[in-house]
Amino acid sequence: MKAAVLLDEERIEVRDWPQPELKEGWVVVAPAFASICGTDAHIYKGEFKGRVTYPRVLGHEISGVVAEVGPGVTGVEVGQRVVVDPINPCGVCPACIDGRMSGCLNMKLTGVDVDGGFAELVTTRAKKSIPFRICFL
Image (cartoon, one colour):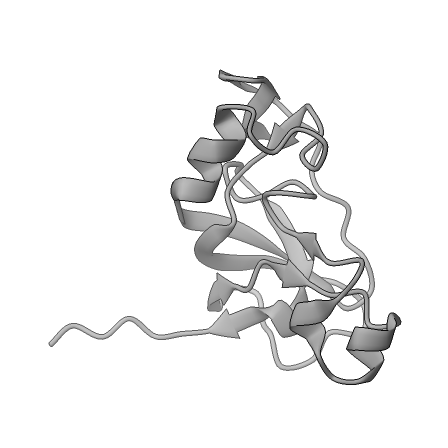
C-alpha cells in the first residue's frame, strides 16, 4: 500500500508501506479523510522527538470505511463508515483499572505513537471505530 511517511524532521515521502496487521478485536479502515492538525505540524517540525519514532505514518484525525474486520469483532461491518478514535489506553495500568483512560500511563495514539491515517489503510480497535452517517441538510 502507499503511505505518506515521515522519515525525519521535515521530510515526508509517499512510499510503499507494509499493510497493517489485523489483530483480534481490531478492524482495518480505508481512510477517506485524514486531516492535518497542529499536532501533525509539531511532529513534522521535530518537536515530538523522543516520543515519535521515525519512520512514522502520521494522521490521527481519521474517518473512512471499514475494509476488513478481525476475529472476535461484533457490531462493526465491512463497508461501514466510521470515525477513528485515536486514543488507545493499555487497559491494565492503575488509571485504566480505575476507569480513568485519559490518564493511562501507557497510552498509544494512532498517528503519533503508531502508524496513522496518512495511508491507504490503518488499523484500530473495533471499539475505537465509531459509526456515522453523512447527513446533508
